[in-house]
Image 1 (cartoon, rainbow, N blue to C red):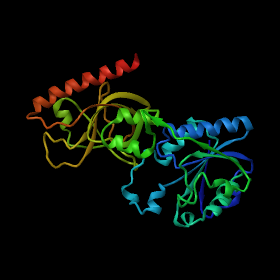
Image 2: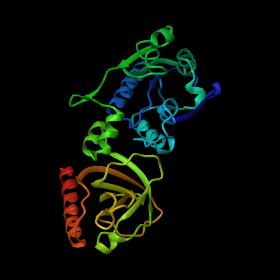
Image 3: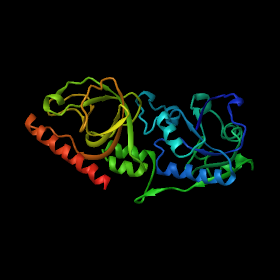
Image 4: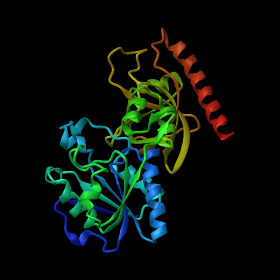
Length: 315
């Protein structure tokens, strides 16, 4: 997959000269509804024997349009993760448009001319709720008037799960509530984050459950406070683990939230290592135990529950 970054106004020489089927969206999370858009575009591309291109943005449009604080915004998929997911879906060209103020000021007709027609779109595919400016003016229902018969338009209908529209907002809400199992159902894959192993208080080692303390290195959204069954990728291998997102309330009342992972079948010094974490299953909430002994007893149960979960997953 070729990744092409476009900063408005971009140089025309950056654009591939061949006609493409172009899928549109921000695609945060590349969830099941997003996958439906890309798979629809893929079918059209194969039928027409054209490359499949996707256009997305480097930051969430709300950061520019609604002045959301960029430093605090947390994504379901960073640009790097989005690239991995798009490649897995068979995308040939990924255009990453830098959503700067100049780009945001484009009128709908200018957007269509400069970012759809100029990208040589033979067919444009997007979800029913895609917008490219003010929602009442620049939506999928009005796109034909801006297209002026220069490309075909395919609109993908709403995708629901258990009667609820699948969307990035819903997935963020499920993550915040710790409902990782529901989030994974909506995503269509196991949610993943990245980080770096840093030094902590070493309390887990004292309890007989040494943990890797994970510091975020990307603006990724973490699940809510709780204990989870996870897998962690370190040194070219995946290991089973149980993760705690919380404040260590048994020992402190006002600690900052930390991410600590006890790997079940790994011992070694991995400080400063970059790791990936797959969030598979919510085990329980964070509990303030009356003693370290009670915590240790619960950790043994968490370990057993984690092994049982993955054993059942394997069938």
